[in-house]
Structure formats: C-alpha cells, structure tokens
Image (cartoon, rainbow, N blue to C red):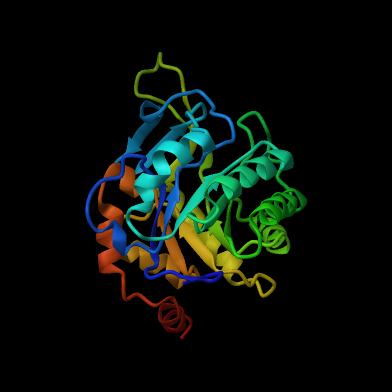
Amino acid sequence: MQLGTLTLQNPVCLAAASWQLEGAGYERLGAIFTRTVTMEPRPGLYEEGIWQVNEQTLLNATNMRTESAEILVQEHLPHLLRYGVPVLVSITAPGIPGFRKIARFLQREVGRQIAGVEVYITCSETGQGADITPRFVREATEAVRNELGPAASIVVKLPPWPDHIRGLALGAQQGGATALAATNILKSLHLPDDATAEPLVGGLSGEALRPVALRCVYELAHDEQITLPIFGTGGIFTAGHVADYLRVGASAVQIASGEWLEPGLTARLAAECANLKPEIISTRWKS
C-alpha cells in the first residue's frame, strides 16, 4: 500500500497498539497505530473498561482513560519505534482548535520520528452525531495537515455510518488526508446476565462490527469521487478476514480487538498475508 511517500511492506497493520507491546514478528507489519491520545489526559477506566461480550466481540466503556500526547512522547513512543516500521499517532479532540493544538505539539516534539497521525473522528457519548459533518471532518483534517506539513501521512478514521460515510470521506479528502480508515467503534449497549446489574454502555468492536465495517469500505471503494486508499478495520481474526477487506476495496487493514484478545495475532497474520495483493483479489472478485 502506498501511504503518501511511504510504501507499506505489508497490508496488515496494528491499531490501538499496547503501550507494553512485546513479542516477535511486529517488524513485519505495514505500520503501527498507537492508542488514541488527547492533548490533556482524560481520566477513566483502563483495561478493566473493556468487556468481552462474546468470544470475539468487545464493548469498550464510554469512560475509558485516554493518555496525553505528552506521556505518549515521553514514555511510550520510543518503545513502539523500536520495531522499525512506520508509527502513526492516533489523535482526537473535541473541536478544530484541539486537533490543531495536538498536531502542533507532535510536530514540534516528534515530527521527524513518526510517519504521521491518525485523525480519529468521533462524537461524544452525549452527542447525537449531528456535529460530525463533512465540513467538520474537512476542517479537522486541514488543521492537522497545516501543522504537520505536506510530507506527513494523515489517515482519517471515520465512524461506522454506511449511509453517511461517503460525505465524511469526501470532507477528509478535501482537507488533505492521505488515506481513510473504516471504521471506528459503534455505539452499543450490552445487558449483563444479572438482571439487577446496570446496562453496559460503550462502543462495539470485534466480530459484530465486521459486517458494518465491510459495508463502509465497500461504499468508499466504489465511489468514483473518492481516490484515497482505505484501511479496513473491524473484527479481523484470520487471513480470510484480511482477504475479505481487500476483496471489497481496502488496500490494507488494521487489527485492534483481535490483538487485545490474542496478543501476537497481528504479527502472525502479517506473516500469513505478506503476499496478498489487493488488486489481484479485487480483479478476481469483479470477474
């Protein structure tokens, strides 16, 4: 996959990478995307805020802890850089000034060390999504692009909204994005077996998200106005799942929930999928 001036060596990438990432094989990945950070830390739950709904589906609590960009730079980034593959920092903010501020900080502190950033587009738990518009995505992407400069790779990760993702993607493209990622987590609710327990409210990831994410990738890849490469992400556990995303138009994939459930999965799939060619898979499918 061509990501701006970068050529990714493998279609398999790690997303939401553990700060304590350990093991062999990660040097085979196409890229490593960090856990999402904010300019200031946001207190909340950490690993205990992730619930396993079924064998391959997770619910991420709404009040998950978010580390600050400063802690990322000082403590975690050197550990991820040691694998020798491109590292992109995933960032989010409540508004355009926030995106501009964190991008400016990263450019000043580690601009030459990272390949770029992932602009994580999401709405607050209390919001209804109306504030996430093509204009907002365009302006957020522009703000980050202006701070990082023309050489940085900017991947815009979009919500799992098949009916609206095309417009959001065009906003990202107009704002100067290098690539798109489809998708992030889906708002959801899980009822524990204990009828007296409070419902678990959060964001769905893993197997249950995969059909929605595949549809989002399909919508983007089959739109003639969208020219950016696409990362598919959501519920990837096997080489077959990787091939499915490439089949519907993705150029590469990101794995997050699968790695959380099975540490080392991403490295193993990178070895299995190193020779997968998206253009060949797409041609066979269309024929």
